[in-house]
Each structure stands twice: as C-alpha cells, then as structure tokens.
Length: 441
Image (cartoon, rainbow, N blue to C red; front, side, top):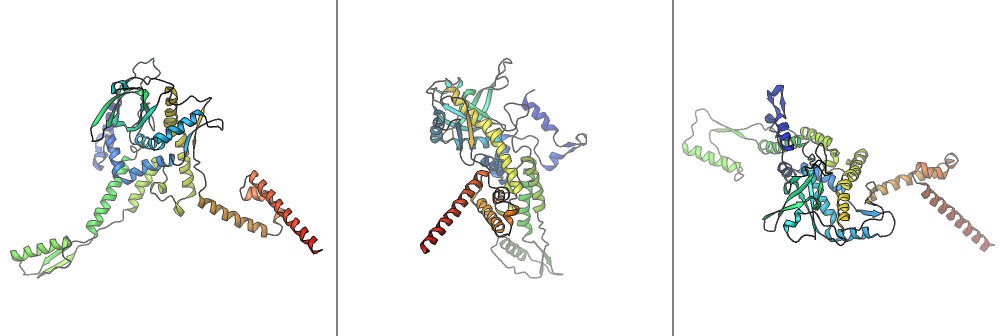
C-alpha cells in the first residue's frame, strides 16, 4: 500500500465519533487531508504559523558555526570550508533549507557540481575528482523536488530510498525548467520521521486545527469589533406619521452617508432613532488556550512563541527549556541531517579534502551570558562581597577563598588569580608604607 493511499484512508477516518454518526471535522470546518500548499499558505499569511517555523530555525543557526579538525592549525579541510562559505554563503542556504524541510515532508539541497555539460547528465551519479568544484547550491521545497524513481532492489543498502528526483527550477521571467537529478546531487533533509525514511511529519500538521481556530478567533474578533464597536440604529416612525416616497429616499440617502462617514448627523422628522446594543466580547481567554496547545505540541515556550521572551516577561525556566530544545535541535537535526551530510558528500566527490582523522561541527555557545546578564551578576556579586567584607568575623566563619568559589560562583582558576592580585596589592601597599617611613626618618 502506498504512503499516499494510507494517508488518504487515515484522513477519511479523522474526526468521526459514535461510529461515524458525528463528523466533528466537518462541523468545525477542519480539513481532512492537508497538503504542502496548506502549510505553505499558512506560513506566508498567518503570523503565528510563521513564528512556529521561524523561531526554532533562526535560534538554531544564530551565531557562528563551522567545522574544525582536532588540531589547532588551519587544516586543508577547514580552509576549503571557509573558502566555500565565503563564496556561497552556506548559512543562509541552510536556514532556507531548514524552513522548507519543516514546512513539508522533506526539503532538498540541490548541489550544482561542475561535472556536467547538459541537463541530461544530471541523471548520472556525480563523478568524483580531486579537483571537483561545487558551483552553486539551491534549497528546494518538496513540491519542487518530487521523487521520480525509488530504489526497489531489496539487496541494495539504499532500498526504499530515492534514486532520481524531478527538480523544478523557476527561471528568470517565471518559466519553469524540470531537471532529472540523481540522488548523489541532492541532500535530502527530513524532520520528524516515523515509518518512512525519507518523508517526515510537517511541523504544522499536529497544530493545524489550532491554527484554523486561531484564524477564526482573531478574524472573528476583529469583525465583531468592527460591527459591534459602532452600534446600529433602529428607527421608529411616530404614531400616525407616514413617510412619503421622497422622504423615505431622503432618509435612506442620509443613512448611507452616515454609514460611510460622509455625514456625522441625521435630520429626521416623526422618526425616533434608537441605538442598538453593541455586542463585543473579549477573545483573550479563547486565543490564549489555542496558543497554549500550540506551545505544548511544538515545545516552544508560549512567551517565546508570542515574541515576549525578553526583559522581565521571560522566566528563567522558559529560557532554559528553550535553549535546551535548541541545543538538542542543533545536535540531533541540524548537524546530523544537514551539515554533516553536506560535508561528507563534498568529501566523497572531491570538493573537500579528506580529514586526517575526523572533524567536528562547532556552534556558538547558546548559554553565553549577554552584557545585561553580566552586569546584573556583577551587581549581585558586588553587593554580596560588600556585605561579606563589612561583616565582623566573616572570614573566621567562611575563608575568603571559599566565599569566592562557593558563594560568588567563581571557578578555581579565577579564585587563584584574584587571591594573587590581592596578595600583590597588599605587598605593594606594604612597600609604599616602608618607603614613606624611611623618608620620614
């Protein structure tokens, strides 16, 4: 049974209760079958959907990253990486690839090597060469990188994996060119995998119903305010009064002008205009529960998801959980499924030289303190040291070295430096005192 057929069968069962008597999905307006275009359109048009994709991706790739070998010298591999990064801007392409892989079942990085002279040669494996060159890289969504043929040989180590892709490239002017591309020219990236080895679960799939609910709540609340914030009017014709056709037309014209802000007053005769009660409800609680559920399924803390992660609004626990999530994402996804496959492929075909032993991927420290954090910690330490120094007998209870290490949190090397500086300062003061005493004598 194909994956598409299995998904179609599952979709027909979604939302049914009481043996099929109640179709909850249909009643609530949810979609049974979701496509890449559904996820992509929500990402482009719905703010919270964009945040779900962008927040983890941008945090993952923030700061410097690269590859390094074991020794301290600049190795040929490191120099080759630096040259390619400078020429192609690798990080920006990896960020785009990451977002596209999160949006669909997979994303691909199309590698443009210099071993082909025409489009038909792209269907052949890359020819390894010591001087092989990578000319360009192109991140593509799954809809522009369809899998055309699969490996069906059960004795092959690539059984069940793609053999040939149909890559669609949009040329300048809008025309689309379709290219047959061998898998060795593609880095195939997936997020969460279940049974399939090459089709993951889109990030927005599990929370798509909540996104639809949010769209209804936010759009409905705006429409409710638009219609209810400005009350309607009820006109009551006085007893015994009658409106001529001309008077009725005149009243209608006035009401139209009033409704469209061309007139701010009404002149009526024998008509009592009464304001209708406005109905405007606060949607905050309803919106909040949707965001909580989205936060729960994505793992993104609510404050970070809604963009209030800075300042006094950010809790220490939220920040720690978020950084732990990004650290795991870097190691188990960005490095394992994007950076290393890319580097290994370039080593395999000869664009990069082989490392002497192995290489590592380094990332900028996520937990590094900001200037604000350092200033706040410095103030706290300064106040604690002041209280310690002014407390009689404090050093008899807790020696200075222990206070610096266990109470102020300095490591042993820092404590040693501070004690040496303190000793040097005391010795300098003693020498100055002795010199001053000698002069007076």
